[in-house]
Length: 70
Image (cartoon, rainbow, N blue to C red):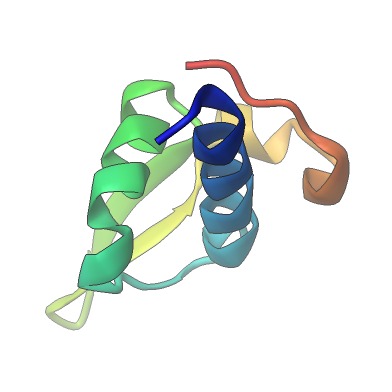
């Protein structure tokens, strides 16, 4: 995957999980990168794994126009 395509994928997944949602296994590799960069946090809700923007991730007010670095 090219660097540009990887950046696009990071932004897409970040936006998808910004407000929190159940984790889709197809997003797990990208989510792990976002967790490592402290943009996303994992939690459990009634036994269901959830991903949601972390405190640092929430500092990004407009997730449509971000440039994440990892």
